[in-house]
Amino acid sequence: MTWWQAIILGIVEGLTEYLPVSSTGHLLITQELIGIPTDSEEAKTAADAYAICIQAGAIVAVLGLYFRRVKQVGLGLLGKNKDGLRLFVNLMAGFFPAAVIGLALNDLIKSYLFGPWPIVIAWFAGGVAILAVAWRNKVKKVEPRAGLSLAELTWKMALVIGFAQCIAMWPGVSRSLITIVGGVVMGLSLASAVEFSFLLGVITLGAATCYDTMKHGSLMLEKYEPLSLGLGLLFAFISAVLAIKWMVAYLNKHGMAVFGYYRIAIAIIVGVMIVAGVIR
Image (cartoon, rainbow, N blue to C red; front, side, top):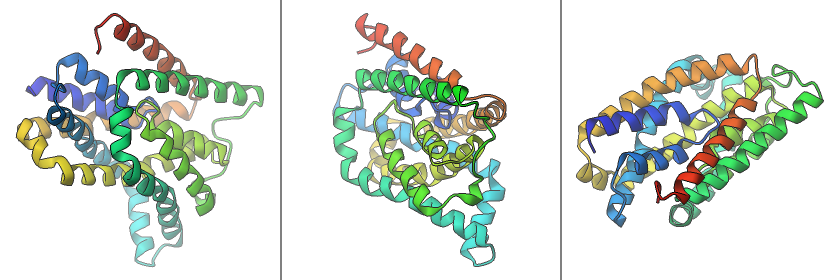
């Protein structure tokens, strides 16, 4: 991996991790387009591990931008903040389904779903789902700010969001998309659903990063230099900060329809590229 390939992958990871467009799908397609070797089982495993490990840069971005919430949870664990403890319980409830199902199906998912066509299908289906929700909200004249606050979320609601998050194990679906939509369906305001999605992502992505680093970290470092990993992490962090700030500001005034159109458009473009032989 060259330095410029590492920078591109870092930027793609950071920009797409928390937007409802699927970072895994974008990274897998980007790896193909910029020539990251995946022709052997070892090369594919190392490339997948790299894509997961640089998520740490995006995780740090959320920890910094939402430090107030992180501090609240910390105080809650120390018995000094009831709302913080409640939020921690909700986050654990949301994480539990992914922890169990992810460990059980991880290898199976990577074997059958980490390919161009499954990603295209998931992109298109997710885009249609976003537009359907946007149309429903428009018909019912639902304002983006309407709904419950994060403090009103219950552990049962969080558990449902957690089960919904498991659908995002299919590359291209988008963990952010599923958890945001799940939060809105559970009655949260769009802003609260986005915040819970981001915080839940810190735990879910953090666990996935630690798991893959322990399992495939040595192989990844055999294939790629430490500089490549460092650049990927750095640019994932920078681009994630920019993407999160833009998304929060945008969704406070608008709905998610723009992401639906984007997903459908990229699904069509990548589908044509696969048929044309540009992407294998």
